[in-house]
Amino acid sequence: MSSNAPIVVSGAGPVGLSLALALARSGIRSVVLEKKPKIDAHSRATLIVPRSLEFFYRLGVLAPFLDQGQRNDAIRILRASDRKPMLTFDFSELADRTPTPYALALSQDRTERILLDAVLATGLVDIAFDTALERFDASEDGVHIIASGGRELEAKVLVGADGAHSAVRKQLGWELEGKTYPTRAVLADVSVSPEADTTAGWLADPNAGSFTIAIRFADGVWRIIEAAVDDTLAEEDLPGHAKLLTERMFGPGSWRQTLWTAAYKKHERRTSRLVAGRVVLAGDAAHLNSPAGGQGMNAGLADAELLARQLQQGLAQPHLLQTNLHHYEQERIRAFDRDIRSLTDKLEAMETLPAWARSLMFSALGLARAAGLERIAARRLSMLPQLH
Image 1 (spheres, rainbow, N blue to C red):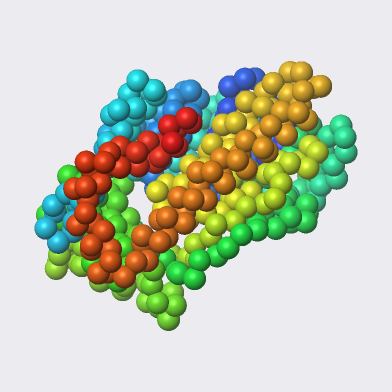
Image 2 (image 1 turned 45 degrees about the vertical axis):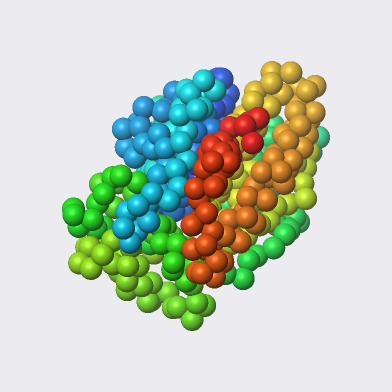
């Protein structure tokens, strides 16, 4: 079976779906190939920052995000032991810069479902689940793509938004260059008792062996992130470990159920290039970094936002297409190296400090507030351009 579309996207995660939606809003058809049979049911990325929400606002899909997510006009981090304030990242000062001066806590499976529904409603996107990209042949004029099931496509541009194990990047022969941190982190989604389900803010335990934080993203459901665990902690022990973390953060008897767990290594890696002729990388296919501070999925959404704009103009004026793709490559590499790389290093250093050093650091937060560091951090976390 053969078909044509101006853009073919490999990967139906938040990056691929938001790119397809942005293109459809400009009347551009696309095909999205996804090797999985359906949207992944796991929560994974749970924080959407103001820049990404502004992107969704322009795409006309902000309302369902607000309906389903936990809005945070300010991120208030409270000490788990006594619920006293530790840090506040207030986004209200961004109100004159963006229509979305807040962050949103929402599981990634819901993010993908909202985007998928919006994409399908356009009638301009063919979503092919259970269809893996197998190989491609690129020329100066376009890309011939062969996918599983005997499907063949002709496109002006192929976008690899197919994650850390990208088939597109693999065929290009590019590597994710950089470093992997020695630490191994744990994510745990847990349900807690109504008495423990405070909405006053997020909870942190600065005195734990490594920095541990709990983020509320649904009624009674919290994401706990433990920055560094022993490598001997086995996968089968993660649900029980999540129960221990819950009761340490929320108190004895607070745990109700462990919904999902994952352990992972943290990275700071990117490809040396993002564009090879008519083939482009975006999201985790192009760069990997710690998800702390919402810099993972949101960095990929920033890729999709810029790439959609460059493709829209390049398809309308074909003589500009290659120049526009080159601009996308330069700008996103610059943004990763300037913003995400340094923040990843700083967060890793803070999260893995010895408990006594971290305690001293947080005891000095009064001075940090006086120096306006919380305000600077809020602007940085927003990921809005020209606010760093």
